[in-house]
Length: 191
Image 1 (cartoon, rainbow, N blue to C red):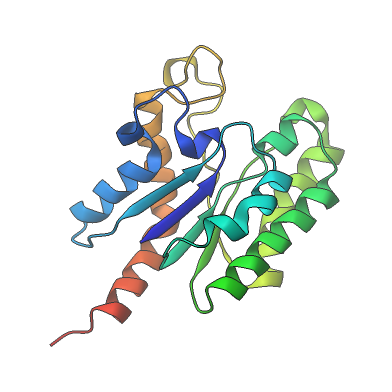
Image 2: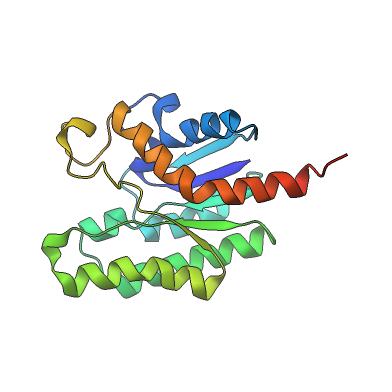
């Protein structure tokens, strides 16, 4: 099972549950011959502080891999990067404590560029820093090739439409596939 903890971008705001990227990852994995079950634990509007508050409860679910997508709402609100980084560190620590040996992957998010390089650059860097410090992986930017493209987003300009969500799923799959393959090989040894 792959547990996706995230914001409205994970929950699939404005879409059917089967159109959200966690469900599409399940299909991509099946197409690759690796059956997995995706658990969508996305909550709209959540900041990294909110994710930290509920992570213990969410981790009661079984999981073989945990994917954390949080921080986008922190960036939209220009919350302090150090605070967001602390929350990410605590979330990863919580997963390691509750589920020893389970791989954790952080989804790279970006802050709006209009906040300036003094905010944007440290925000971008924190995901890699937390991953290195806490033994997690990083999945490339969730909205790569989707953000700011009106044909791939809903009217709000922030949430992908069904077509955009297919690209989001491919973005996530690129970073997640090696971990899924390694998990599958370990849990299904040959012969």
